Image (cartoon, rainbow, N blue to C red; front, side, top):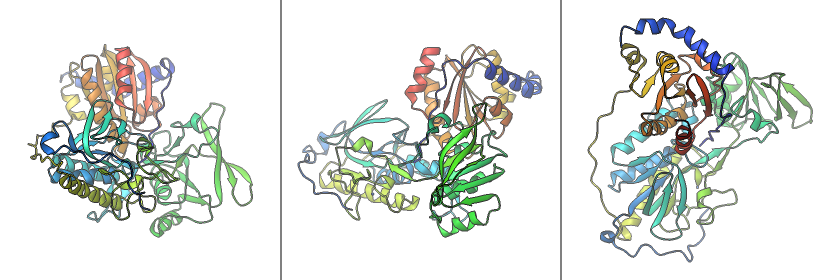
Amino acid sequence: MVVVPVLLMGNRCAGTMGDKMADVVHGLLCSRLNAGRDNGEVGAKPRENQPPPAAAHAHLSKGVENLVIIGSGPAGYTAAIYAARANLKPVVFEGYQVGGVPGGQLMTTTEVENFPGFPDGITGPDLMDKMRKQAERWGAELHQEDVEFVNVKSRPFVIRSSDREVKCHSVIIATGATAKRLRLPREDEFWSRGISACAICDGASPLFKGQVLAVVGGGDTATEEAIYLTKYARHVHLLVRKNQLRASKAMQDRVLNNPNITVHFNTEAADVVSNTKGQMSGIQLKRTDTGEESVLEVKGLFYGIGHTPNSQLLQGQIDLDDAGYILVEEGTAKTSVDGVFAAGDVQDHEWRQAVTAAGSGCVAALSVERYLVANDLLVEFHQPVREEKQKEITDRDVEQGFDISHTKHRGQYALRKLYHESPRIVCVLYTSPTCGPCRTLKPILNKVIDEYNEHVHFVEIDIEEDPEIAEAAGIMGTPCVQFFKNKEMLRTVSGVKMKKEYREFIESNK
């Protein structure tokens, strides 16, 4: 699971950016506006001094859920599918958690070519979409909410999100792992302004197109990012601390045979350098074998250097190893606490594959069912009636029948109209087709917009369809949200943020 950093700019960013935005929007859309006027994870320690399973039988368990799954990704969604098919009606908190976004690391992965059943490969976000829909189809209760508190020291267990508190008899922890940072001296200064941990999110930014970029790392993640970035960059440099790559042989071959990628062995990034305008202009390199230093001119730096398990919520409650991975009994998903199970990368420091994560999710769900039955805690739920999905608004819909009384819109035509005519806060979401976190943010932001229906106008902009708009707005990665009011830009928020942050901002500016 990859960290999606959040950059909060100053409260007021009016002036040059807003004016430039207005000019570009006006110039690009004038003709459209005129045309549209006529159309309206080594085993766990022995279990000691822990609370016994709930003494209450199923008929006394009113208000207590069978199972809560914390986390999504292939582990969480697979667990949800199996648990839902067993009529457990699992409650899944798939929302923004410590270190990541719904769907896990695959939401920041381009091509997944080793997951069975997809001979031509599949993108990470598309695979997660399919898993999510399958879990939902079988009755999993999905909440894109922020898990803030977990108590597995007493029973029933308590899971609290930003929006609700749930009591349950069992828990599956599938919170994954977070991308590591290098912690360079100027890293924070340039995070989301040239430095990123997600090539698929930020590589398509107009500011990176045709530029020279760099990737740090020698494993599959780094090599995959380097290959992906060649779609947009003029050239990509891969910085490897050791004298060889750790990636799979297939990935090594693809990188070493790509004329647009230069691999620098025994090389590490020491810091980034900037030009007189304060923009990132290069990387200060250091040879790990000789100590020699040099500067490599690049416009962007992407990290692919490993992960840290997202087990913070369970510290002091269940057994963890020295690196923070949850300890489970060998060959099972059982942790040191009865009724608490772990699946995926949060308990797997060795394999860390999508298919092994999915397998562990299956094991965890089957273990939960067996646990609930053995302790007479299981309450079965019938499958839900499925509802039809609403059709998404398209640019064509907007142009043929734009109605400012509607809250949600899409495309540059709608942006032009709302920017100049809306008396409300205008919330602009910038996305790109391959951006996994964008798919995560959309439903989160949609819920917030629905709460403030009369005070906000919303418009989505695809930065690949409208690169001029994105460049004028200074968008260096997706997802990114900008708030405007009365033609003044109030704030820019990069990455995925918790719902309460968007709520608080809108509430204070409506």
